[in-house]
Amino acid sequence: MRRTAVLGSAGTLIAGTLIVGAMTAPSASADAQQNNGGNAEARGVRAAAARAAQQGIDWKDCPADWSLPKPIQCGYVSVPLDYAKPNGRTIRIAVDRIGNTGTAGERQGALIYNPGGPGGSGMRFPLRVTSKNPLWTKTSKAYDFVGFDPRGVGRSTPISCVDPQESVKAPKLDPVPDSEADKRVQRKLAKDYADGCKKRSRTMLPHMTTPNTARDMDVIRAALGEKKLNYLGVSYGTYLGGVYATLFPKHTRRMIVDSVVNPSREKIWYQANLDQDVAFEMRWDDWKAWVAKNDAAYHIGNTPQKVQKQWEKLRAAAKKNPIGGVVGPAELLGFFQSAPYYDSSWPEVAGVWSKYLAGDEKALVEAAGPDMSDTAGNISAENGNAVYTAVECADAKWPTSWKKWNRDNTRLHRDYPFLTWSNAWMNLPCATWGAPQRTPLNVGTGKGATKVLIVQSARDAATPYDGAVELHQRLKGSRLITERNAGSHGVTGLVNPCINERVDDYLLKGTLGRRDVTCDPHATPKPAEAKDAARTAAKAAADLPTVH
Image 1: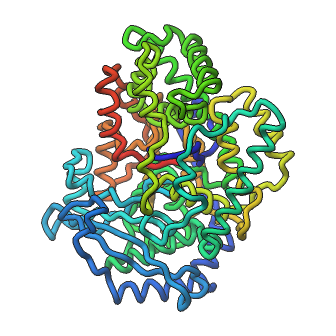
Image 2 (image 1 turned 180 degrees about the vertical axis):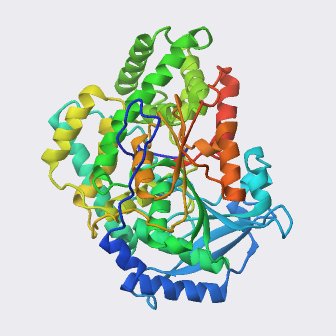
Image 3 (image 1 turned 90 degrees about the vertical axis):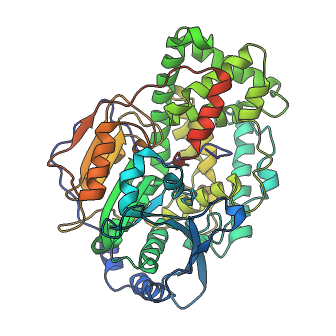
């Protein structure tokens, strides 16, 4: 997972809620209905899609520096920067694909993927086929796997907010303020970041919205020659999928959304990030309990309380004297937060920490320190953070009162200190954003829309469980698969036959089942030797969803 700061997208947690009862889907709002009808953006996307269908995609072998080997092919799709002006400036969206591995008779079309963010690249999706990932063997027989860089990301007219060389400098300020003076410094940094976005990416910012990315997906669909969209979205990709299904219900065929952002207008995006802080604390507690249970392997502490004290001790030491000169509290959090995100990271984080406590700080510096190679070209953490900020700031109207931010985050930090202030500073540029902020779309589908499959772990930290419940209510006829007593982010990428078989049945046969399903959790990670843990985690990270 690539990131330079804590990144947010979420919903509130309904503790212990596993079974969803009967639900009534709210109808799409007037603005969604208008976008489906005849307003300027709707006319614009129809015109752009018609052009794309005629032009198609000039598929070629991918450039060598894209690290996408044959038989994966790459190309571009042109879309309007502003769909209200479809004959105005265009931007290019990078796409890639690998054809279905089955026969022509088995093919069911293209499956388009978004890993999350906002700011994540989906271009690695075809590698699930070339790497022969067993979870996707059946699906790849029926579908071309298609990835893309959303607008502003990577090779799709990338945006920037700061010099990438500056973004990797470490150590950064401790996100937890000790005084009002510390808060003033952070507020200035946030304002400077917002100003930098406006200065470096001015023309793109007004158009960096989730509805526009959904419109881009419809143009990609047309360029692929597909009448309807098949889609897999994870994390933020679930919100993108919900917006697409709202705007283009008649263009949606099969859609899986995994680890769901709460689509409520009241949540997008300020409240969603506050809710996320609560869920992260819960999952942090889960990891501490696992570390304590495996104290014989890691020697960090044999109770969660002792593990927490060791964390506080490590944090204080790094604040006083940054480890290796570059790892302070902010960098520690950037590394340790992968444990609440993905339990596949549990052995790695514990192993690196264990080695540090045994006197070897090299592994911790390598894991948590700045990646100086992550500054070249368009694919960088700086670009990902810029897109994250631009989309969330543009999608919704954010509070501009510092008193509100200060009150809300001070209150939350008292009980949920792991993530709260870091998440606040990550999002604070939206309080002084220098581009239009819109009212979020009212996500929802009506009668006759495609029935969507929703997959969610009950203890997800990044996208808490009630987001799945909310989306289930809004997408008429959808089904919800809950993985109980589990909290990893990105459930469809995990080995759990109860989930994997239902995903295959839906994509291959359209089978949803007559009711929602609760599955037992996937296997809990086992302790690993520290020398093996980093290798295992690095291999797994190549296919993890991106969450901001």
